[in-house]
Image (tube, rainbow, N blue to C red):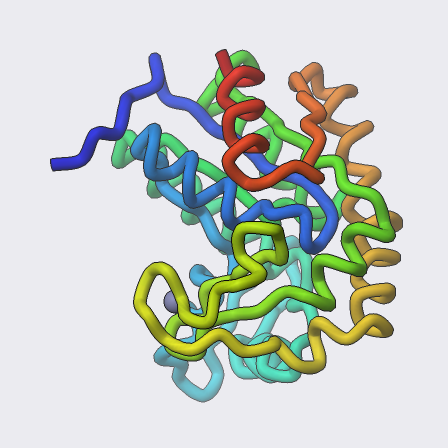
Length: 237
Ligand SMILES: [Zn+2]
């Protein structure tokens, strides 16, 4: 038995914030509480890349994107072409809307290009008043500290953010596997690059959301996950 609650009408929650703000943790908590579909762009890409034939492509605005080329980018850790990603994301959103699903997005949209592609679609399907945007606000120092102290579990790569409660943990609370550091992605130099990308490519989306008359609620993300969650619930009421 799930004790999840239903929100009134079909809803979309979008969680924004810098790397290490705890977006994934909050998205999972919210998905659970309100029975939302946790929309992860990386999973959609993984699905798409699972079985590809030699010259499979997707055509967007007259340009062909070969799946094998996009897969290569993805495997090297680069971002796939924004038109390609946006196309796939929009297709998936349409499918989920038809199934009557409520959505929670974290880490997407990531660029203004992607936002300008998917926000009009979300507004058309779900209506502006049903789209809630939460901005988790965390300072750059804290982001660097948290990311460089973040661990993941060996088995499922569950992220364990650094906090007073988690510092003593040796094993994953969800599956019991060992907790390890994430390596290159969480090196201070890499985090600085990711922060710069966030500031320059992702943060401008907030202004765009406001221009589109969507409500953005800023939440202090520096508290413990439980307190941040409480504050998000208040903001959603
Ligand atoms: Zn785990």
